[in-house]
Amino acid sequence: MIDHNSKLPLHVQVEDYLRRLIDMEKFKNGVFLPKEVELANRLGVSRNTVRQATNKLENEGLIVRKKGVGTRVAEKRGLKTGLDHWYSFTQEMQEKGVLVTNLQLKVEWTIPDETIRNFFLIDEDKKVLRLSKLKGEESGEPIVYFESWFHPRIGVSEKDEFNRPLYAMLEEKYGVVVLRSSENISARSAGPLGKKLKVDAHFPVLFRERFVYDVGNRPVEYNIGYYRSDKFTYNIDIKKGSF
Image (cartoon, rainbow, N blue to C red; front, side, top):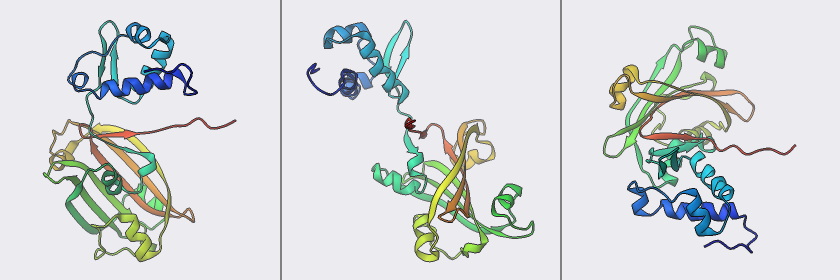
């Protein structure tokens, strides 16, 4: 199971072994994983090597450790997204084999609030197109509610095909290529949106605020999203840079 002559580090091999364990049905059903000392003896490695592997899996949210009790497979938290997929929620879900659909879609011209006006650098009385989308499973169960506002210079119209992936439509029809986004993520109660998301008003949701720019660093879109916390996990993978 563990090749001590391999160039692959021991902790990586132990991690791979543990990943196979947590995929086993009995462990998925709540059976405790073997203790560190037992794993170390079984695999012929040190407890520090085992701990290095379990720390990695715990940080990924795959296992839960409780002192004096033991280690179990974590309950699945539903769908995940990451910073590398900010440009298309639908596309990312398709890559995971999950089909999401627009449960509700509304387009209207509105007077934006101060945050949006300052981002777009527009006058107080300037109307901006707002797109609202409730996305969820084909069964009708909601996952996330989005609202987007678009900079007036782009020329987006209420007649556009908003059932298509948004940024693909902007590029093909308006020649707008989005390059980056700046995001703020926080937790809050569902509030009035609880009805749309089919949860209680006090139910916790993940709130994500996004500022989207084109290749010229010009503002393109202001977007907010409310994700059901029981359906979604926002994953951030951070790599250490070189010095």
